[in-house]
Length: 410
Image (cartoon, rainbow, N blue to C red; front, side, top):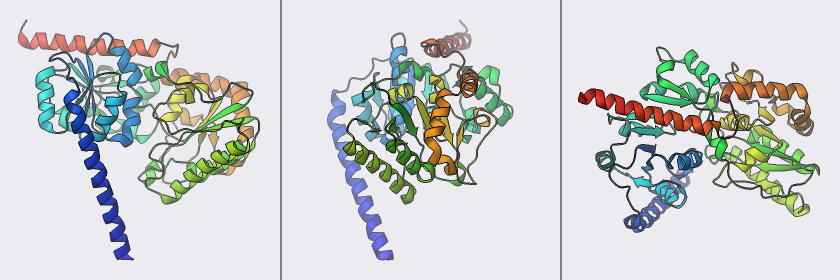
């Protein structure tokens, strides 16, 4: 048995090596034709050290960055060959490949950016953060009440752009000796101003249910995923209803740790295909595409796990249910929205159709929803968050010039 296991591990490693070599070869062919930004033209750099599996984190910022680039020099720094290839095909702003630290040195020397934005807490962020004379700003890739949102790593950055009052109170409670007034700027959710794509189904009388679960997590405290505990029942009930349409959008890492979780995910995908084959007019959707937008904006009701998807949906201001984790080890912070969430427990998943209808139509629940939308994001009038994001960047760049002038004595 050990020999078989070792052989499988060796095969996986060889396959991974071959894929990596193929990607590097493809990138080497393309890079000579990729124009580099003119020296000194990049005021705002977005640092992304992750590979393709976490592209969703930077994709959420494409729309806001494209808008910002209309009046600021913006570029994305990529450290991964696979991510760089993808960014070359997708990014609306220039991309710079900095595989090695010497490449970062060259970029900093050429561009002297005023502000560097970080969309996650990758350990390699510190390779960029060692450079002074620029603001290092954590912008994250979502808003949520997960423990990730209160990490002491916030203190490593000069500033953090946060969503609103809920984020501020969360940080105030969790972090010692952190100057919120000086180091955080509330901007709402600018990504919600740039949702893209059109629904791949007709506009009809079906109630559209978005089921957007997270992955199983890599430790008990983060075991928020519901695919194995709730998901198959949710899918079965919604697919069986002629009045409803299911849009299934799982986290891209679903099943990478737990084979049983992966099997449950695959069962849902197969059930969607079978339901559409039985009734082509149903137009149920398994969505694993790269863009997130129409899914959140169009669905009548969303069902999400404890993840940033809750807050992406809140930014839209439309009804949602939240799955209750079955793991006793999962850390659930119920001081914010989750104190008042419309929880869906695993035992209640069989009644999901009735719960969906109540979430969409109950006046009291809808009023509570409006309260939490404002608490987390403030004014969600289209365009407002984008304007706040631009104002925050303008403020940081102006402050950079003030500090630079003071240090030079001019």
